[in-house]
Structure formats: C-alpha cells, structure tokens
Length: 330
Image (cartoon, rainbow, N blue to C red; front, side, top):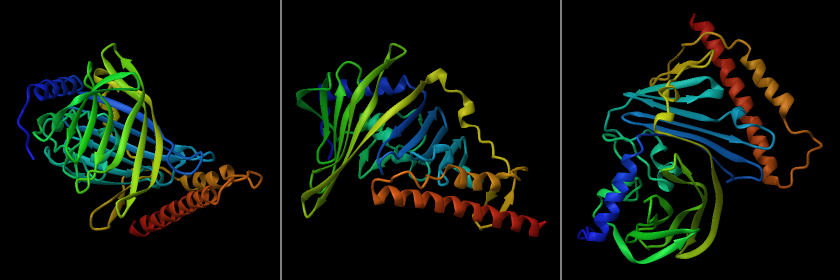
C-alpha cells in the first residue's frame, strides 16, 4: 500500500539517500556466536561501486579456527564475473552476471544489509525479503513507509521510528540517519519475526557512526503463539570505508592445485601445485582434533565436532578422487 508523501517522510528519505550516497565502498569483518558453545561464524562482506562484491563465510570452534573450516565458502563478484569458491576443497565455479542482476545465492539477505542497509550499487537489483526493501536506497524510494508520531530513545541514541505497516519497523538515529534497530514483521500477522538492535556504536573518520555490536533475535511461533526465541551477538571486528577499500579485496586468485568445475559436471585443474595438500588435511585431523581428556559439556558440542571431522574426511576423499581423475584424463 502506497502512502502519500508527508514532509516528515521527505526529510527522512532524503537523509537516508544522503547517508548512503556518502558510502561508495566498505569492507566489514564480523563474528556471531550463534551455535554450540564456543562456536562462531566469521564473515567478511565487502562492496564497492560500481560492481564489486565479496562474501566469505567460515565457522570456527574452540578446537578449529575459521581458516580450517572444511565447508567455508567465498563469493567474489567483479564486473560481470561471479566466482563461488570452496577454499578447503580447492574448487571453484565461475558464472556470468549482468549489471542489473541481484547478487548470487543467499548474499542479498546477509545480516549486514538488514542491520546497516548500505548499498553502493546503482544498477544492481536491490535485495528484497517478503516484499521488504532491505537497503537504504530501496527504503528511501518506497511509498509504503511512514514516520510514526512517537519518538524513542534506544541505547543512548535519540531515534525517529519509521514503519512499513505489517512488514518493517526501523529506529533511525535522528542526527546521523543510521539504523539503530530494526524489526522484520510477518506480513500475514504483523508479528515480529526478527529483530536487530545496535548495542554499542563507534564514529569512524569523525563522520560515520556505526553500530559495532548487535543483538540479533529470531522469533518462532506455533499457531500464533510465541514458542521460542534465539539470540546471538554480532560483533564488527573491522570496518573499512571508501578509499580504505582497495580493488585487491575483489581479486580472485585460485589456490595451489585448484580445480574449476563447470555446469555440465566436468572439471579441470587450473592451478598447479597443491601436492602436499592431502597430507596437510590429514594433519589437521590428527594434530588438532580435540584430546580425549577435553570434556565436551553437551552432546550438541560433541556432535558438532564429529561433523567437522567428517567434513574434513569428505574433503580429503573428494580431493583424492579428483587427483585420480586428473591423472586418468591426462
């Protein structure tokens, strides 16, 4: 439903456009503690106008660093090229992407787009979730939001509140126009499905105030009744803006021994080397697996470690078969 533009909404939407326009490149590393005790997710997300994007997702545990995650994934978009890579498996796939295509896979719904709303791309299709524009240019261009008459104070920030009824509710800093908190709603019922709330803030370059710690809460319902919630803390460990973000962050270089896999299932080794990699994988399991003397407090933690070891073994087997096939093809 489109709402008539009010003077209050014009002021807010202009503020969102100006804030976003001042950010033409950014690179953020963040970690979240959602999962078994001691486990974490580490992500690197970077975007640079007009057409560069990076997303690197990896998991860590008390026993394995994120660099050793056998199921980590990396997406690199540079111009018309989109490369999905599995670094541990030394495997990647290349695809063509148009200027106005959305980002591939699940990248458009990364938590940072919900929490910050930054979007440096002019042509690329903006992320939308359940009819909700996730990023600042889409919010500013929408005629579905209204400025609520109430003002609010949240974690030391004076906020105005805007709302897309039964879809989206956002607390905006009244001075700097950044997102302080946000609730994504169920369009059918209006109930809150997800909330992201900034807990601590930092001003970068004396101009950009950024929430560097979030609380992310997911709400689960059964027949209209709230049954459970799941919360995680998200911490930004590094934030680079504008000229600090070089093109090198978006340069793809295959790891030694890497294979390129094609849509038809065929593959070819495109990078030499990697002869000792299988031995390195075996060392990862034998040298750094949890000692029997370490007590795992819950069955979930124990299961998580078993899965990690199984993934390592699967990666070793995959590489072994690939090496055999390469020899047969030669």
